[in-house]
Length: 187
Image (cartoon, rainbow, N blue to C red):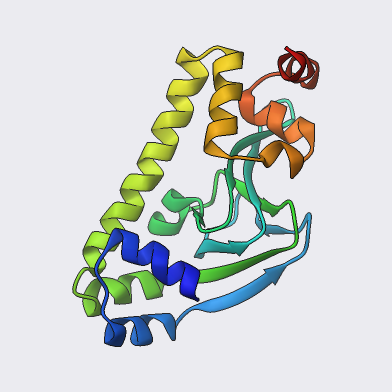
């Protein structure tokens, strides 16, 4: 719980009394490698905070191919935030790529935090902004960066990720083929 407290404290000021109250509502879940914790078409009921492990956010395109949208490493949040907030079917699936431990934050818990934490609404706004920036960066990257620039940015954004996950997920995230990724890695 110390990790999530540090991360939340980076967003907002939270005193010990607020922390004791809010953290009592967290649920911890252990997820096995390859387990899907959100399936496209289902409503995202929780925001996942990755304590240990690695999550992959992906969707299936019109050709039936999986396309990796994002990776969530330790000390980051993961969700289909639009589905979570609007309670609509998710456009994404989320899968553990390693045995993973997450802390779950439900919709009710988030809204309870808006009311009970001095800076609860600020936390919600900052999480929403973070989600917006993630989408914005991904879209800009696909349309304005070359494959080598995307590859280099991946290495900066997710240090050592190449050692943690299969190459085809990296290629999918970069929107290139596995063959093209092999060429980039060897250049």
